[in-house]
Length: 338
Image 1 (cartoon, rainbow, N blue to C red):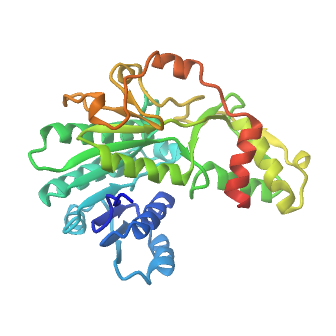
Image 2: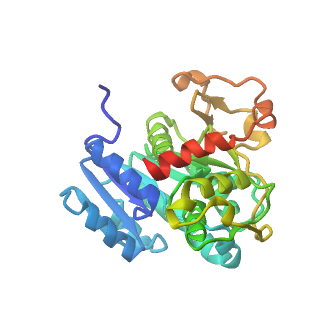
């Protein structure tokens, strides 16, 4: 059995009390990391994490803010790998508070990068989003600039740190994501609020998200962005499937739960994209994900196991079919009923 890249390593997870942070913590425990340092400004979230995982002697729980350079400098000391998940991620909140989004998603990332370089951390992985592709809102724009910070540091960096990003879609059943919100609306008897029946989104599971992060950690040469090949869902189909799976749990039939159209919120698109047309020109693909190489590094597809230059990648997206309702039901049953 191949040894995990986390085995025997010291790992820092920023935003570590969130759903992805907790999933990474579980993986680091399973893979026998030497030290797991969970960093968050969410006091309640850290308390809950400590209640669950505090019996593990190799886990540290640190409260603080990535705004604070001094704090950030301290938390990266002695660390081999940084997973940077701390971010403001709600599209509408970022539109209302753009300076806070800039402070967290850009300046906070800059602080982590600077500290990582100063402490000669071996690897840093930024968790980004498909909203960084041709952004129209503050959240996507700030995450795009965070990706650019990572790519630029891979070029300018004089240390041996390997920087890379992963680009997520929507992650099923994470805190603050769309599924818990819809479940709460079903629990209250409806209506389910949908912005636009034409809206489509890419989705991934928490396990897929963690596997993408670990793959990027193993494979990165410096400055790449790794993007999972995700299924595309119509939100209307997702909400209908959720009614079928959850209505009876709260004493309703699916037909009793109505839908209410509320209109697209500021910063939202009808459909997100995984790659820009420019990125499609240089991207590599494996069976499970795309690899966008750093523009400043000379890499070949042979530098990544089983990677190749895709043929007609535009058609991959132009002909992309959404999941059927039956397929969505299967995923939701695994999420809620297993």
